[in-house]
Amino acid sequence: MLDKDISRQTVSGNSLAISSKRDVNLNLGLTAADVISICTVLLENNFPKLQQIAMEKSRESVQEYGEILFNRLAEKFNEQIEYKLKEPDIQSAINETVLMAAKKIEKCDKKMLSELIIMKIASPTDEDDVIMDDAISLIKYLTLNQINFICLLYYLRFISMTGIGNIPWEDYDESNLPNGLDIESVRKHCSEHYFFHYEQRINAFFFREDTRPISIGYLRTKGIIVYDKKYTKKMSELICSRIPSFENDEYKDKTINDNLPNLHKLINKFGINNLDEIDEMVLTDTGMVIGKALLSTKLEIIEI
Image (cartoon, rainbow, N blue to C red; front, side):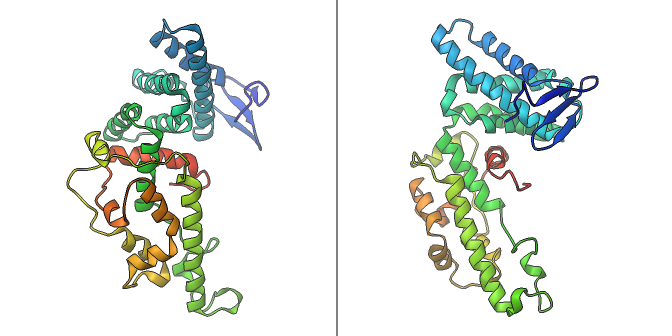
């Protein structure tokens, strides 16, 4: 995180020179203190009568969130956004997330909350903006366990990894095979590479000690999962279609069971028996926003 006392230098006008691994000039028109101040004022306006100890804990949580939000603004935008933060619509959205940081403290993901604000500011259309508002409003009704599950659904359905290094699998032919290997050996290696890293990411991103069964019915009532719909392409088929050696596999379910054991352990911890059940969990637009927001805090090196 940026050290607001050391890493921020005033340059010209309302610009900031932020030093981390390299110097970057950002025309933000605001400082970390500005963003933290906005969040703190919103806290005090909403909780004027909190007991001193409770207020101090909430204040610390909100200040932490304010600094996280500032850092994300600095990373994401290179133009004047001070005016955006003063818009009533954006202020209302920040207020919602501040309340979450103040009330739940350790039971909310502050990085994800800041990501929702970033996505809100960057919404390209009014329709996207409404979906963002819906997602921000719904977060307070969801546990970290539920949000993690929503993120897993988004990850499994919409995110894939391809290639070895920077070369996509489909670009390999007899002319560019590495180390003199034949095409089938390369395809086999690619498949092993995919399964290994897919499992590694699932372990790193989604395994939590407190993972427990969730209520799909509750997520449906909250507008996260669609009623009475299912994906036409099975999850096992989708995963295999991304892997050269298995796109035409006749035994896709067995292939996934054999090669992705940790995935099955994870969905079992969520109370899901198999991948076929996940095919019936179709995310709404709001659900996809929530899943993407959390995932973007995990996949820092991948554009999604």
